[in-house]
Structures are given as structure tokens and as C-alpha cells.
Length: 91
Image (cartoon, rainbow, N blue to C red; front, side):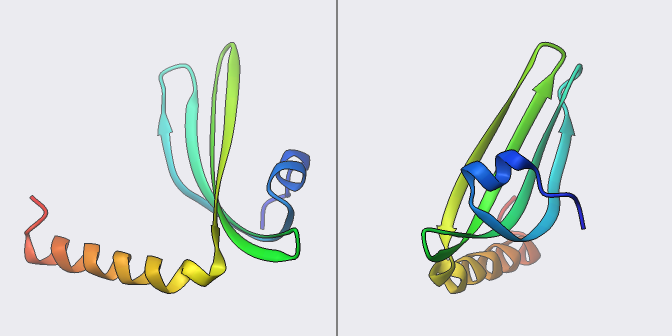
């Protein structure tokens, strides 16, 4: 498991689990990474998608949080996306 950053704790909340990097791509002189965190903030658990980009002269981090009650909807959408890809309908 990766070390949880101070910024994650400040901006996202208490990190319960860092699931790691989902995607990573090169920006020439920098990188962009998207990762997934499970956090507790304000007494509620949330899934947080974290996007971090950095280059030679600067960087950016953004967080998008989703209440854990929405996990079934995400699972449904992922299942639908997988079915569309498997059927070739998404081409």
C-alpha cells in the first residue's frame, strides 16, 4: 500500500484505503494519474477519484467524491459498459 499524502488527508478526509492508480499517462514533460481512495469525511464514507497532474513547472490535484451509497449504481453502469463493449456496440 502506498503512503497516504498529507494533502489527501487535508482535502479528501481520513483515508481508509488507497486502492492505487487506475490510469497513468504521459504528458510529454509530465504525467497525469487517476487513483481511487476510500475516505471518511464529516462522518460519512465516500469513494474519491483523485486526479493528479504534474509537469516541469507546476502541478494540479483534483478530487471527486461519491457517496458509498452510490456504489451499486456505479457497479450497474460498469456492468452495462462491459456488456456494450463485449457486444461490439460501443465501436
